[in-house]
Length: 321
Image (cartoon, rainbow, N blue to C red; front, side, top):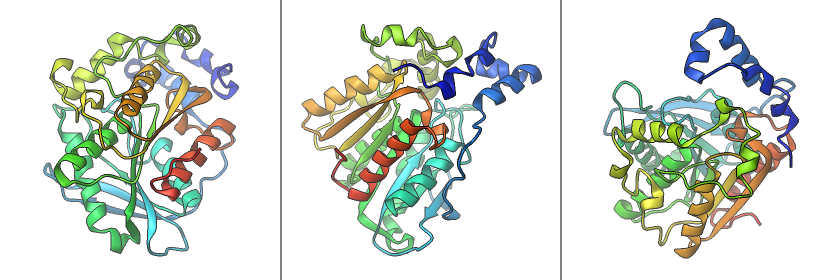
């Protein structure tokens, strides 16, 4: 289907902006970026109990934000959630983090733990963000009772770079702890150091997207090398899970944006999972660009995607069909 009008109607605001970095530095361009990113007519996000805490980690405390249904309870399902941002941007207040956590918390009756992993800026590189995520998941497991969580119903997920980190953490926890989350929830993520070329069907769709919103090979190379602190050839299976042995991984829900240069990575990864005998469901979210979880639930496609995520968390090992 065409790009959703809630997005395409604002493409004109991006004309002449060469990069997000340059746009953010120029007051006039910044105003246009802010208008493009603004979400008008958004329904109020669910009201849930929110708390701040920190998990001990090898690089220092890892801030986490917990979301708990107002009714509380014990033995609740749980989602450990990781925002995106190309490994170098993002925080717990962005809609992709806060709104997503609130929606899953309410819809699934689940505790959501949103992780403020260290970003790859100022010389920080892999494995620091990866270590932070592993530490946060271990903290949730160890504190399951006090969080009101069923330790056997902890799922792990993330969007974009957060999905990469979630998958890498699950693989490491499998290998080091003999433990796996109940399910992995991955939204518009990338698992390859070099993203596969788009299919013949996808390529013309991508041509409709403004350059600023694309992830062309040179863009992806810069993101990967910044994350790894060097060339992509140094990526192991924890940094880029397409390089990993995937056997025995938990069920995986992949939500792909229809219009996204990174979609081929998730599609190829789904094939690798299936070959390894992993239960995987892949869903293309129609009309959406990369980052659609930053939009609100008044957009039907976003509402349906959040419903699938909540069902996967609520049902544990079973993926919604």
